[in-house]
Length: 60
View 1 (cartoon, rainbow, N blue to C red):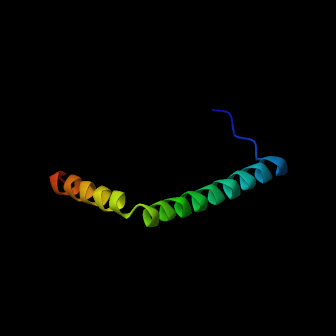
View 2: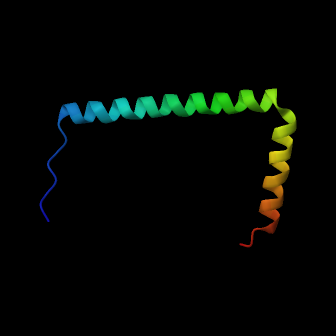
């Protein structure tokens, strides 16, 4: 197997930028879910109940 060359500074910066954008996206996604949960409490309650039923029927 050929040895991997060390990453260049540009690749490291690109990876850091990708991670930063991904972290921002995940924060925005969480915020949007929380907002939806506040706006549509009935749907959230139903989803919670479905999840509880799934967990009860799941076999370890």
